[in-house]
Length: 328
Image 1 (spheres, rainbow, N blue to C red):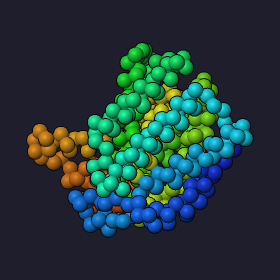
Image 2 (cartoon, rainbow, N blue to C red):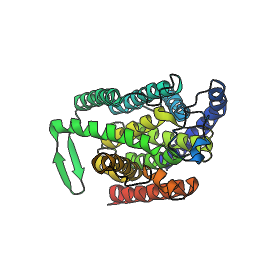
Image 3 (cartoon, rainbow, N blue to C red):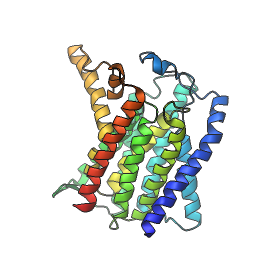
Image 4 (cartoon, rainbow, N blue to C red):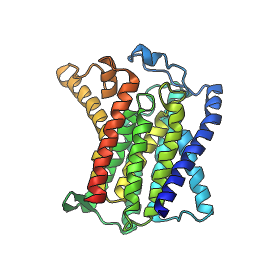
């Protein structure tokens, strides 16, 4: 009962603080014109969104950090090595996303950070993560259903792959109003439940609290971000969410579950990657537009229906993950 109470309190606090943040932040962003030009290759429905404020990730990021600071001072969370890793990655990816958004919004460079620069910074984050992870005495075993594989130093490459893959996959998914935020809320709720059942992990309670806080804050953000969006998440939000999601999966030692919890992000990324390969090799498109959500739009599906479909898929795979991890 205590765990359920803590979870509900965290959800509610995250939701309420994010709502309050949004009420004050959105008018301010409009006033200083924090908006990004909509890509010209998208359809008219997206062109109509020109001028909508971006960098809305500040709403849930600041909300979560603010509540965690209060929790720390009242003794509700403890500073553990795993908690430091999680918050550090969350902040590093926020900064990385902010730099990307800053170039796009204020310097009018729609390409943002170059791929090489972004990957280099993400690699540095992964190396720091791995160093702290190993110094803390964590093992490098990976459980794949009934089997365990010892990766040793190769675990560092797994961390790099998961962090880079997850952050960029979530970033690609952030293409429709409310799509990324809703799917990520489901993902973090799933890992919050798993965390409460992972007492063998150092700082598992803090990880659970973080997951429920961010899920609640994302639901609050959806109040402003759901179709039609009053504010967009921006790269600072999507990169932070993707990085934190991978970090939680690694710290809870359930790396394989990210393939199921993040099924929407993976499909979105694969369709985008497949489109690029097809154009470069055969000079032909597999999809009308990539990633998948834009392809579905081109087929005539309305934005809200696509979002509901992806929410349903995300929820079904989250339930499958919980059945596998908690009950089996």
